[in-house]
Image (cartoon, rainbow, N blue to C red; front, side):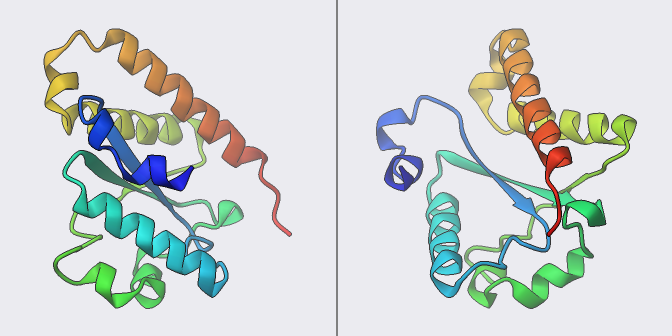
Amino acid sequence: GRDSLISQEKASDRPTFLLLYLNELTYGGTDEQNAELVMIIESCINNPNIHTILVHEQDSLKGGCEFGDFFKVTPQKLIDEPYSLYRDIAIPLFSLKEYRDVSLKLILNKIVGSDPTLRESNVGYIRESIQRTLSQIARGGSRRSRS
């Protein structure tokens, strides 16, 4: 569950990431859901073994919105030091297949580039596994219907 996501001390030898998918629904849950999301983000940022990757949906049919909108809905404590959630540039996620492929490769490169173990190892099989996972995420996102 959630506790296994946050407490990575036992798995510190494995690269671990928080991929935060940013769209109009990211902070659109109930107060309880938003509080839990904030707690997870804080815990991940505070854990040096977890790398945060921001992905910003661009397609309005999938909840894409202007990046500036996140500064209106994100709790200020996540924006300010020490968390500085938006310190790194979010990777834009586009719908047009060619652009989406580039976006997914940027995510993959960020994953591989942010962890020395992945950079120094033979990452071919890791890249393939991550690419399959990201492609599944992308396909799942494209099937989502708006209500």
